[in-house]
Image (cartoon, rainbow, N blue to C red; front, side, top):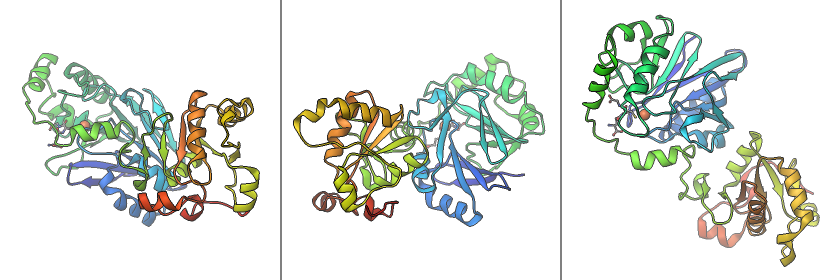
Length: 368
Ligand SMILES: N[C@@H](CCC(=O)N[C@@H](CS)C(=O)NCC(=O)O)C(=O)O
Ligand SMILES: [Fe+2]
């Protein structure tokens, strides 16, 4: 069974779709934000259910679409634990496996290009990210790179795989698509037959120009591609003071559905009955009066509802949910305010160019 190889010309990045033919569950390795539409169309056309996005490392040259795919396709993101990508649903350790349908993928820790970099083995294929490239390897001159670590990853971890294993790299700048472990072990110009000293000397002498998008890409990739200043119109999380962030209703829905967060409706019973409610959301009312910030009933109910997960707070228009998010933060929770609430706020909608609240966004709700 072959992976589907996809190419982003601007960054010469390869992304890969792997799927289980029976359940049609799929994984997308190293997705690129600019290719979101193409990738969603491919999934739709092939009837694939995207279970996971998977990163080989925090990229320096392009931005991942992991957060966008969580929102648009309901995928959960899995990342190497050593990459500092705190927004991911799953932090993979060496030897961990990821399941999709009846298929299993194995995570190998292959540091060197970055200290957290991983390669992934699926059947007779290995997805090497920027650890092993065709007749090359990832650079080691920034992002916690280490030539000595890369030498070990190449010679002791990847070259220990069977020679017939197909190598699928994270980039190729010359149009080549894949190789094999046996071929790279024998012919890779940087590492084949080289000592550690020779390899390190080669890497030290590369003198590559820095990637054009380095300063923008790394911070964005550390939060799954969310641009913290891009606002919620793009479906992201906007940084806020006093709580974890402002979040669009569509992204909130995706996180909730993925099981990464609980949805808490802080409106009153009367509002839910009159206007409508979200089935499955937990009701913990936040009343706009001064004593609320120290109300033990609210605190206890919210902590019980959260169960240690992130909390996504929904009110009518996005005002009470800010106050509730600040209180939740004081209780030690990761709390997000869902912008525009259940009904939306006409003023802020006009200001921000938004569509309206949860009810108008096509997300699930019912009449009270
Ligand atoms: N020119 C590219 C950057 C190319 C680059 O540095 N690629 C990294 C991977 S993120 C690398 O390790 N390249 C190894 C090589 O070119 O030998 C850009 O500006 O984005
Ligand atoms: Fe890279």
